[in-house]
Image (cartoon, helix red, strand yellow):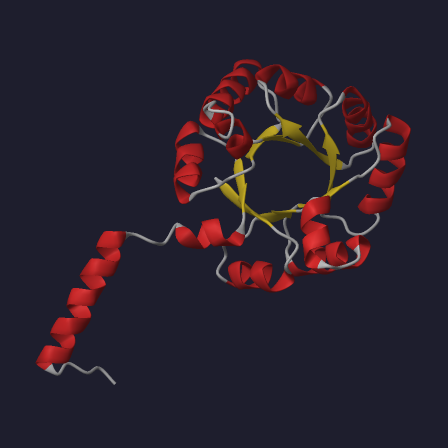
Length: 217
């Protein structure tokens, strides 16, 4: 499973990228706002930093305007993925942009039917939102599983990009189900290394090493 980091913070991306933990980056207007940077400027910097796909989201609501914005964003770098919402206009924009050879990430997916439409429209990625479904007492993982089954049944090449990841457990569950990609905040990716028994074992090792006067250098 590929890891995309869901942020527009350059330092956080760089730290994970240096460890080989970044296969791509996803951004959205909220993350750009949080970074306090100009969208074109920060997106270009991210594209220069990582070699994988970098999702940059349109802000228009009408298909023609989304297409124009998508073309503008795609000029930033070759690894730009134009991100469009899963609306009827968004699907129209997806069809045109993907037809022009641009990568397209269709976002805000909350049903298997929506995912099926996105694949038919030529989406490179479909972004089902796990956490937001969980917030409604629905199991977001069920959606990932449903999309995986449908795409495998018919050989769709659209990649399942699990989004709205809230925990390290979400990451492992997505991997078990067979999501192609999971995009998560830097803190969630780093939290995957944590385990209470690792901490407990390390504390004992340190205690014993100090007690025995063990030194290596």
